[in-house]
Length: 341
Image (tube, rainbow, N blue to C red; front, side, top):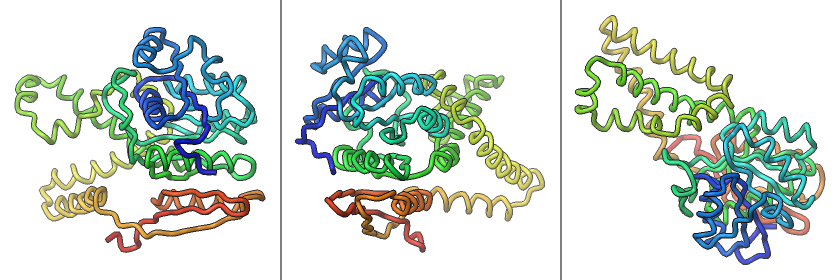
């Protein structure tokens, strides 16, 4: 069913940094019975000072809960998932917010958790870190990737989709873990490499100080994510290493074309390459979507449902509604218009 803010849902957030803390605050603002736990005692104390439930142990935080968000640094998520699964009720929906999905999904499958674990990744954040930087609106209207699995795991996907749409106004993007990791490499991870390379090159430049004095919007925009905590960035890049390197190769190839055109003074070629890049940049804010409603049987193996969901996501679409009845589950979906207009 679609979980509503006034339903008797009991949730928990494990790892209350920037993203986990923002999830915790949003759930609390919505009137959800939610507890938060963090391995840092000072963070737990800060949460309690804000009037939030923050037990001393992870077990206390997740016991009896119907939904648990596993947050925290990417390398810690496998252990966190196992600890939570061992304590939470067997019908508790588990999800995460990690920026890479392949390794953790394979780990969950190996441990027989895909019947209730729905890999997730909200595409939002900030350069700041920690619970003190969290806000209840940070994830509002974000594209939120979920990885549905056919069979017994599909009901958990439906329940989580309903919650995210209702409470966060999320645009749920269903994808396979492999497609997610390939797409997010270019959408998020490679930009961190490029920002770090530009800022790092300036730091080493003989005219460093005057460059920083003259730096305007293009430098500031291009290096914004270089201000992200270094360890968090390293964890993200290493967690999706092969896909990031593949994406970087594509960027390097395009950069080489730009450099070659510049080197030989080919203005037409340089103009054409930038015009093509400009079209992709412009599409960020001007995409039109066609609305689609699709129904599937509530019971069964759900293979057709999951195949449709994955096709929707990999095509750039998203879900903005999920209603589950006794016999039918109905999705409200949005696909990019063929014309792009």
